Image (cartoon, rainbow, N blue to C red):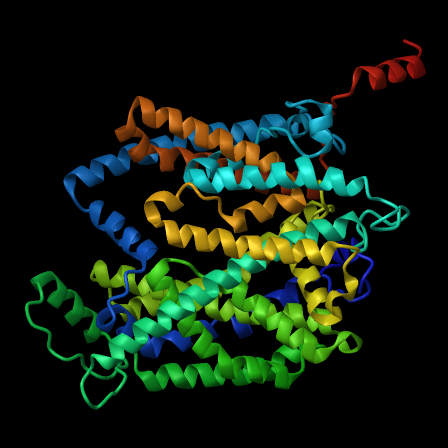
Length: 553
């Protein structure tokens, strides 16, 4: 929504709303709690009756339980020490790099490790401890997928399309125009993301509906859907641990009337408040969203329990296509669509997160009431802390959201262009871009079909379309960092798999956290006007000779 992102595009560049602490905090407070209340009445259905696995929540529960064993406590202490060591290394490495970044294009992050020509096409290793750590955590196929996407786009497609300048699109366009090369980058990436997201959305939805059908068909003749206030039918041969977990989970109940009343109250407050923050988002748009949101939140929470996939961004995409088209370009459809996307994503995302936490609480014998209250407190804290952290970045880094900067925020441009596409239709695309979008949209669906047909054993060798789409817009530099992290972990596993499994996540966490924490003092230094003393740049031999001649050396 910001002016920085809007001005990068020629379409609807006057439709923007710059970030402000007051409206960001207010907006989050009136929309972030709805998802929590929407999923509470059916928590028993998903956790006890349908016995959904929620893989991430289950893994977290097993990790917490393992800490309370003698062996687990000993391993945890060693892991904490490893995290501390690599946190310190990553933090100091970020501090060291800061000294050489006195100007644009300076520092180790601009080192042309694969050559200057490759650097121009965003192929280089930028010495980021964060992305190396992310590469150690992400599955190998995700890192390879990102690298393949970068090679396909920046190595082949964009140079080829650039040769069509003057034929496929005017040669005198601004770099950020959607009618030029930028349009191909953004919309082809969007087509890949939509193809992958919609395929998984309908796959999860079909599994959800099928599972619901078989679950409900197998229930008693009354056909009543169990909710929090109703008891489950007795099941024979349940283990003692399961009986104890179920008893504790049902003992500390959250009344259904409380959840419904909470949702209706917050929805009413939000419906009257949000239009004051976003005048383009009319109250009846919000009302329609809140009528359908509980069903979509349940679908997302249920699907997440089956597959561990939260499709919040896909539900958000549907929101700004529907609301943006409904509002129209002449009535602020772009901002209305983006705001609607934010509302919908908040609801469905918090619903699936709370369901994961309920599963963790169920397996760790924690009170669901305590989990819900903790989630409310955490959400309230997040409504204040997250905007403050973003505001710090926004003020400290003036190029936040600009392509090629330290923080390009690629999804900001992608989501804005999706909103423009929803409002203006396909007329905003350059020549042949629509055909390429069709092709990549179909390719994403085809790749997913092949993965499902091959089965889990062979599917792990098939690239992920969503991961391939990310470098289409921002470049391949972070993919190289992630592949370096994968290579480190791969070699470590070959040398000592037991230690790699035990301490690999700890090393990765230390690298990510250290580099991330360094951004706080660097932001404070930037706000205080303290600049690095050295600019380290890398020039070609010819450019260096020209500089020497100019200086008379």
